[in-house]
Image 1: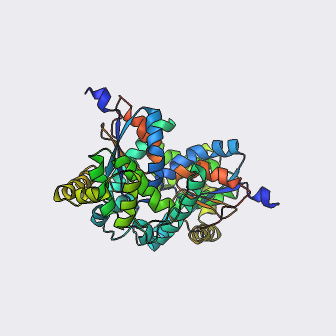
Image 2: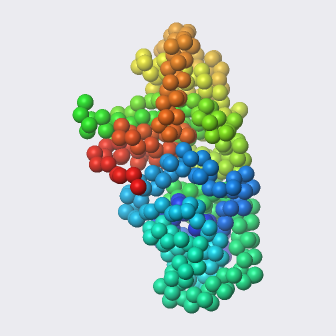
Length: 210
Length: 210
């Protein structure tokens, strides 16, 4: 591949527990197609990254005023985007199993559809994504052998893959979700930066760091 | 005033030390004019609000990975907005005196121009806004009697006004800057929400809270 070709890819880093990752999941495929940028889904776990910053839960729980704003912000954004939104209970959901299934699915071609469906189940349909039954229902609705998928997800190799992906996120300086990284080494944090990240994925000139 | 008229005002809450408040200060007047929304400048101090969350400095200093992203994010946003940007040293700047002068100036009709000029001095011209000389130069360039303005800023009444404004910010649930509040009680956090806040300032129907 030439440099110009590799510059046209954007990595989409998300944790299934992340509210703003849900918003990004509803927008990224159509926006990327319009921008002619290939997107790679990169599920990872925020837990170890938050821990490294001294947080044992979501900052939206640790800082209640920030949390109050977030829930209202999400209600407003969902209205503007024309998408359903409901507040998960508990929050954050344990996203480990869903992330493992997504990692397995992304190697088999159904990971993107599965990921989008998990976000929708959690944030639009009040499902608990930490329950295997929820994931089984999603897999079946996508025509995937749920038992085989869950077995693949729980294999040692696959567990290591998710761990390595989380370590890669940390090495890239990722501290929240969603995040977007370009082949050129740019990191963008937040659903608010999705359009900008897609535009920068296509830039050929570099912006020097001050 | 009727309900519809009061709904057309947006309060712009900022701390002069805040990087993203600088971005908002370069955009708010023209965007508000286009949206036909009256904006009220509300300088306040983030220090006491951060302290209430257990932070003794900017979260961008306390969480270095977050800080690294912010500086790069600002460089990129400044390019996209076509505005100059430089990193203040030290960061954050002590914004107390500038905030007091702004509060005094907003009662005398020159507070908005002064505020915009302070942000520009700090983030585009590498000036230290904690030095009276910087503020004196700004005031003089605006044709204002600098000594009288600084005296008014340091009066007991004026100090209390800034303190009351900071307490009001806290009561409104403000936890960062810039923030925007509507007469209808909506709080928006961040330069990224400026357009949305202006749109919501004009909404007549309410969105129920979930």
